[in-house]
Length: 106
Image (tube, rainbow, N blue to C red; front, side, top):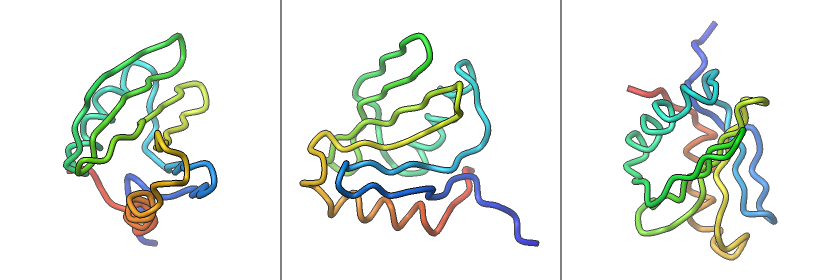
């Protein structure tokens, strides 16, 4: 059996401008390291970080395109969300394709 890639695509919600990701297990305290490794792999950078009781919300820059990286630790859910909804589908289409192919963190 082939090894599962660290990150993959669960669902691409085009109309909502959201990409739901498959990811390694994490909790509230371990997500920052996982999130930083994911962003390094994507060559993306953090603009701003916010933490609430159960969710990390990071405003990130991916090749000049800003979006949210969100992680909710109770459900171990990670998703990318466009600030502009579905109006910027070119970047989201690219990212969804990347996650659909799956990749490992190094």
